[in-house]
Image 1 (tube, rainbow, N blue to C red):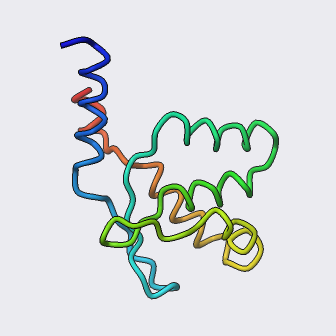
Image 2 (image 1 turned 60 degrees about the horizontal axis):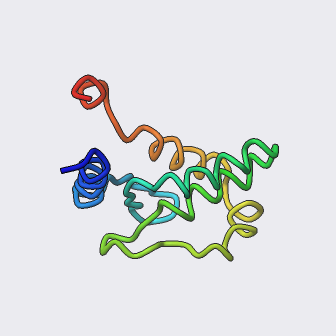
Length: 110
């Protein structure tokens, strides 16, 4: 098995793991999420690098948020409304939870 095969297998294991979730009472829902790939991370990082923090936060939510069945909760076209018509504190809380995928014990294992 090559290193690349092992790396792909590891990522697939992360994708196959149970989704993490956060109850969002303000929206009367629970948001679930899975890891994103390097390409998606790069898309978000490019927005941050361009000073488009609000777009980066909205894109993080769009790319990661899932319904309980694993389907995407938002479409890319929802970005403007997320950025302008939702409570930024709630969105920030969700995105912060998504960025804290691993606790200290998980990090120590790696």
